Image 1 (tube, rainbow, N blue to C red):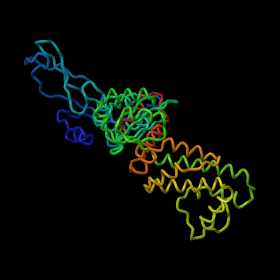
Image 2 (cartoon, rainbow, N blue to C red):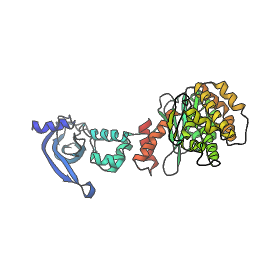
Image 3 (cartoon, helix red, strand yellow):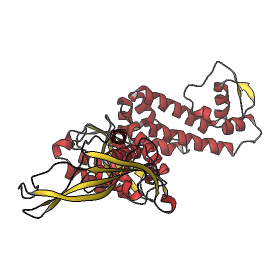
Image 4 (spheres, rainbow, N blue to C red):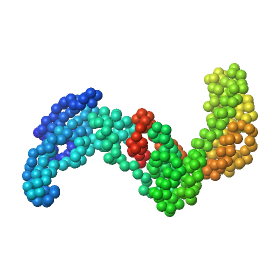
Length: 412
């Protein structure tokens, strides 16, 4: 019996009241669920005299209750514990009770260790079906374990620095997410992104004093979010994410570059540079000293020479490139006065760059704050990347509640 009982130690079952009687391998299940299980037959019994219902010492043994418990095994082979639980009957109140063990919750058929294993696998962004295959339980059981152990809720305290963003949740729905800019932990994930939903949540969840203590709100250039920030957080500073500022000017520069391409001879050196070496124009510090063989142009040249040749085709493209470099250097270097001058003193030239610069003027205070502050939307963009990886691994979600439980496990 001691050799059989040592099997329980491998399964991390430490209850000394469980005694192993038999170990065997057996095929269980139907169709795709048909697989070989390691079956462990054991009994659970101990001395119990006082009735848990009436408190009288009137209990006497009343046979065993046969149960089947899925437990976490040392290998990939699923393990099933056939546990016969001792039953008692009270001679006073005629109620019955069953023996309990720390290895499994009362009235449950999945062991505690296996539940923890399921939660660890879910934290790795594995689909529920894959988790079910690895653990030997059903997909519905996996979902029930996640629902029983993960309870999404809003942060009890409102951080002083927060990030706003949105992500695509189920089907075509866009959901709102807010995280702590310092700890990168989630504050709340809302099913919708409408202003009324966001306002309702913050007003109902946090007091006026809590919201007044918020110092910074980091976001992209979403005008709808900016419209409610000072209403919800009267003392907060709006910070536009630096990446979105640079991205706006870079995309505008690319639009002008494509317009110039259409007017050039496809065999010209300028066309080859603008078409094949477009990444050079996004490089902040191009090499002006060393010549390299530039594929696409198919000749040796410094990066700076190639850029000069490319920008010479159009004054509008030259201005767009110079504006991109100037704004990038001022923004990343923290030169907020220079950045403000670049935006406010900009002279329109009839290109699409005018639209981008007008957008920056409308968001001038948030853009200047981006140069002053070290905070950005990088943490929340990282969270969104994790959410995308989760959706990709799980082939999407049809149930938003199930998705939010998985998302909360990732970012809580």
